Image (cartoon, rainbow, N blue to C red; front, side, top):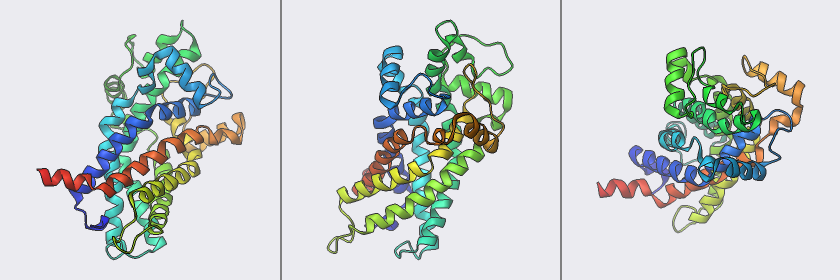
Length: 313
């Protein structure tokens, strides 16, 4: 059964399972990416390994999974929408998606990127606040650490409760309405659309190189490696946009750290104050996060977990 023959519910299940498994495996690296991107100048972390070691020492093993609950909850609809939307657009634009057409593949990827931000933007907004709280506590010192938990209490008396996704979401909705959860929507679109435009055609063409005549599809190993390769290339390419999105969506700033009015303002300040290399902060982490995420996604599609689950029910 080709991917185009898989039902929409099965595609949604496949995308959801892939997201859950992937996030559980690579979330600590994603946390390191967020903290590295948010620190100004050299900061307190020298790199991914140093960040993870300091996080584990200061916050314990579970500290490396701060914000994971948000991802685990929302990554299922996010990945499901992304993968299913791409397949749907490919069917509509490419005669059931069976013929290679780079322009149509890129257009289908663009459509998938637009669709997913409905979930991606609020998910990233909440996740970033929780991931960065430990960096702020470390940055400000023990006397100022409680400020990290007040980072979301805009314009109100705050408590010293440890930040949680529910607390952050409630405060954003109360003070800014739904728009608060969608802060950085433009930056999210600027990141996710190019990523999808690059990833999906690249994966399709890499995967087609391993299609076997007898089965009509590539092997599991080839699909997995194609997903990893396409994911890492696309992730590194759009890292500058991911840095801008992370900076814009971070509500609480450390001492001496700037706030930004938008994408252009953020890019200008980043270039002037930290130089061009700042746009590639966390690039290695991002590749290590995205590559297995999409390798696992293609593997789940190959195995057909969604179809098997539907058969049971």
